[in-house]
Image 1 (cartoon, rainbow, N blue to C red):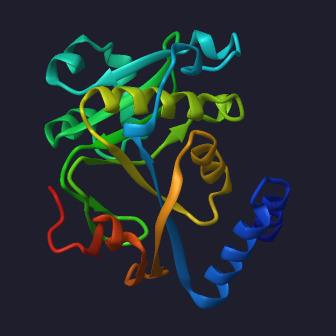
Image 2 (tube, rainbow, N blue to C red):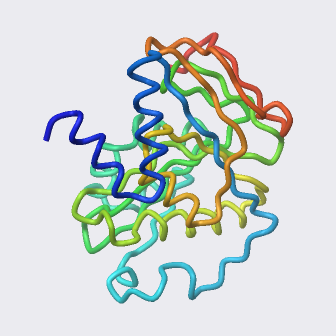
Length: 230
C-alpha cells in the first residue's frame, strides 16, 4: 500500500474525511495540526462494569499501575522490558521524573500502555520541542500505544477508563493530551471515552510552533522548549 492509498483508507473510518483533509493541508501547506483533548475527572464516574465493557476477552486483561520504585520492584522484569520498548523513556526514569506508567496485560504480554506525567510543565518533542504549562490539578497523558494483535478489540478504551479512575483516585481533576489531526483511530477512541476537544496547535513540519488556539482560556500555555530534560 503506497502513501496515497494509506491516506485514502482513512475515509472508511468515522471522521476519516476530515483526517484526510488535514493530511492534504500538511502536504500542501507544510504544517502539522494537533488537537488537545481533555477529560474532566470531577464529572466522571467509573463503575466496575464500565472498566472493560462486556467482552469476555477484555475481562482477561490485567491492569498494571507503576507509580513508585516499589511498584517497579514488584513488577516482573519481562513486562518492564516490554513496556520500555514503547514508553519513550524507560519506566524507571519516568517514575523518577514524577510520571506514572499504566498498562493492560494479558498473561505475560503487554496489550496497551500509556504514561501520565504529573509535572506542571510537560516537555514534548512531537510535533515540536514544546513546553506545555498545565493548569493546577492537570496531568498529561503521553503516548498511548496498543500492540497490533490487540487493536480493534477495545483495549485502548479499556485502558483509558482504568487510567482515568486511577488518576481520579490520586486527586487530580483533569487529564490532558494532544493528538495528531490525522490520527483518526486515536481521536475516535478518546471521544468514545468521554474526552473532548479543548484547543489546537499548528506547527511547521520542521518543528516550529506557529499558532495555538483556545488553550490559554482554560489555563494551558504552550511555548518552545527552552531546556530539554536529561
